[in-house]
Length: 301
Image (cartoon, rainbow, N blue to C red; front, side):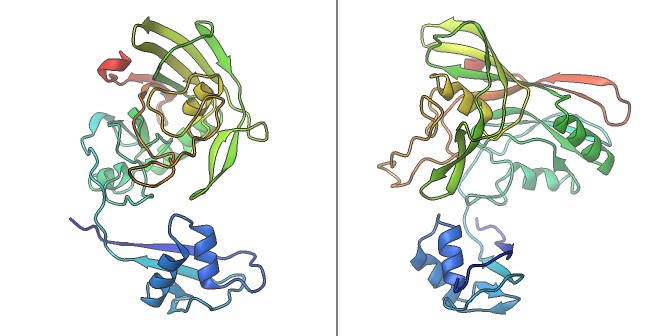
């Protein structure tokens, strides 16, 4: 089934002299080739200031580009969501692994946001989970909830605990990781987050839950919420998540081309075991402390 299509809007800031419409899209959005962007412009899918444009039209600061993407068929994903709790301010749900949270990377309607807004039109996410990560997510249903919960997140007043599966573990049973996280070059996305000393401070506390013949179950409490923090931190100390296609030991990127798809690994690729297990926060209306658990898949119990 085709979705409804989407319009992507870019408001231009500073623009180098001579940059054309085609140059802009080919250089900024490298998931498509230069030839593909040229075809879209010629088919009238890209507008400049609300008017169809040409590939060689030069750009100026302050202009508005819109790409009117026609309806497309999205990849199938698991759409089953567990509703854990709701009131006028808060919605707690359990997300399945494989379901994207927000539109992007070819997903629009097959996202958690789209599914929830069918029933809760004003709902907004307070934090994020990667597509391959399962477990509890906190959403705001009111402006009061959004403001007060977001403030708690910024001030590191929330408790966020995850379960993770690694092949082995050569460190102590209790380890604090403080590897900085920042942007690294990526061949198709431009940049993605990884371990780099030039990045932002981040902190994870890792505890061994059990050591088994086929791997090690970890519990990870994060004090900061950098993108893909747990995946990066565990890789940085030499133990990436089992099945993680992107992050290599050391926290860098695996940029080996997939022979089946002829694509580079990206953050949204699945295959690893990571679960948002526990979430604690002060309720935005009452101020009462609430702590919720979400049952993990069998391997992470």
